Length: 296
Image: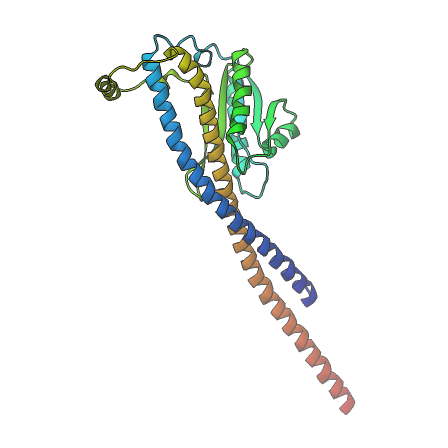
């Protein structure tokens, strides 16, 4: 059994750790509320952007000549995992990288080459530790991404795609469902699917009822400008989903750590009381033994 002094030192250390984890839980909770509000606003914006693209596409004579819609035989696929810049978030980073590596193995088994673009220090360090060649990396904004961060990522993606260096771009990230649930998803972002520009019969009837629109410049030119903006919106939305997921995972991890620390403190306190009682009993026995020795 450990001595009372050692147990007191351990209790003090665990108590300090519990204060830190509790503070981190509260900070993550506050950031999560802000991140959720940003996601709700962004979802409305993304839906409006899609409707605008669909309406412009219906007025276009042809959309097949646009670079971001062109499809070609897949030889090189870019995998883009969105990770965090910090740890202490449970399995948040690990599950994204695990899915990305599984995707890589599947693509290579089909005879395709994989190139890596990564967001977040954790993802970048893991890939470099495994000696992967990273084509591009972005860090420093996982907690609170800005639209400019999404623009930088899209600019590099589009550049690689239009130059023919990659034939497909797949995004891997945590989609936020709740503070307790973050679901890893794989999403093709390039080439942009033409299905996004299609509408159902009911929307066509509504457009016919509203009448024709006059476009200036031509609808094809407008759509060519809208496609990069749509891609930036989708990447920004994924960054916000990832940021909210990270805060949710960190809040849950710190809550569990605080709970475990409390249980450990209770266990050590009981052990310390037993050790202290054993020391007192031993001292009493020594006093009684000394008294008996003096009386004999």
